[in-house]
Amino acid sequence: MQIGCGVYVHAVRGHPYLYVWHYETTGGRRRQVKEYMGAAGRQDIREEAIRRVDAYFRRAARDLERLRKETLESIARGRSA
Image 1 (cartoon, rainbow, N blue to C red):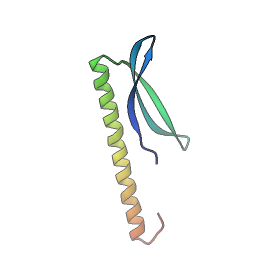
Image 2 (cartoon, rainbow, N blue to C red; image 1 turned 180 degrees about the vertical axis):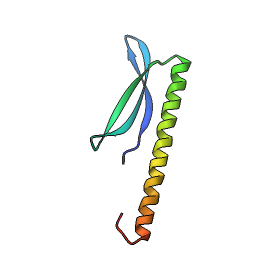
Image 3 (cartoon, one colour; image 1 turned 90 degrees about the vertical axis):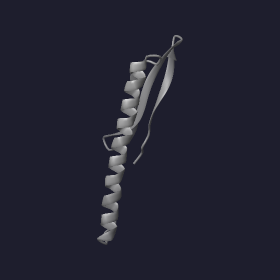
């Protein structure tokens, strides 16, 4: 399991643009996905980036908690995880 998400600014012709990146599974492999958000100076763009990053980490936390429970239950039953 590879967890990661964040933002970065990329300048194009002197203008800063905001991108959100995260890892996702595609075809059984983890890959980094970069999403263009828009002009880095716009408040609405930054707010949308915050929403997306927060949603990613909330999903990752739920997935990790599910995996933790499944693993501990498997150990308690005497089975390999």
